[in-house]
Image 1 (cartoon, rainbow, N blue to C red):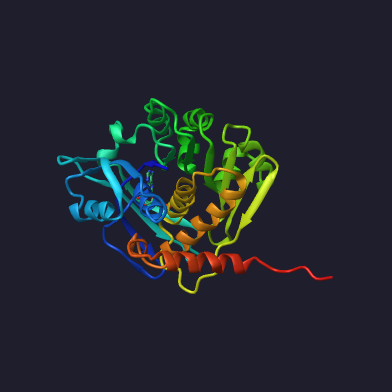
Image 2: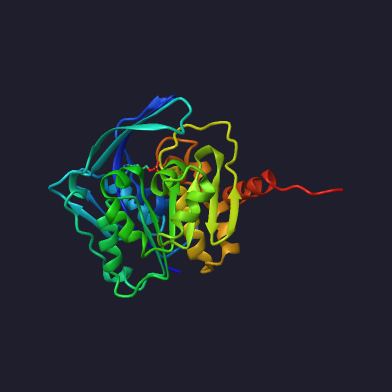
Length: 306
Ligand code: AMP
């Protein structure tokens, strides 16, 4: 089934304990669509870049089967730029710089090919724009997922609460869940957030895995203890791309299938962090993905004997 992703397509400059990069291609929609490309063939990106964005990266997305009709290029402007520095435990990071460039006054245009989409991923960006994009679909996609961040809870909470009313699934990290709900207990936080609109909630806990909540049901997915964690940038987006890509591939949004999807999402995120930027997502094989999914299954499977 078809997937449309809307979000930032960016240049990132990163500092991790293992090194520094100059401007490299990043952005939420880039990570999401690359991860989803391993699952779904009908994979559309909607975003905007400036004249400084490398044409080769657009070709790379196309090479991965991503439909780029909705990726606008504004030759007179600059691509969104984000710079971040990770702390030594890498679950924490500071934003050093954000330059919105062409993203600032952008009004998303949905090409005809994106209308009729079954799955919609609203990547992290200004909540009013996420809301507006959802309204632009003549027919509401059957499954709408949204990612957001603490910044919008600080400066655009009302807009965020409005768009939350209309979505099916929210993905946030544990500190954001606490901030949004005002509850310290993750379980209480989830309960409260599930009254705000989304029927499904995913709380990401970085290197400690992720929790899936729906009604009274909870599922826990661990994160694979990796020997090398080089750069966590994009891990959350890659996770979301793997999750929704798997749902789009199977066309099944039951809770049981979401359990599988969350494992696939985590497997994709585990690849992402092994190299800087999107590098590790560019040349994965289905065998590698399957092998990693099996490692997740083994990590948490045991037999009870009495
Ligand atoms: P993640 O590590 O999954 O949270 O995502 C990191 C990506 O989000 C980077 O590639 C950035 O370009 C992008 N990003 C960071 N801040 C923002 C923002 N305020 N709006 C949209 N995208 C952002």
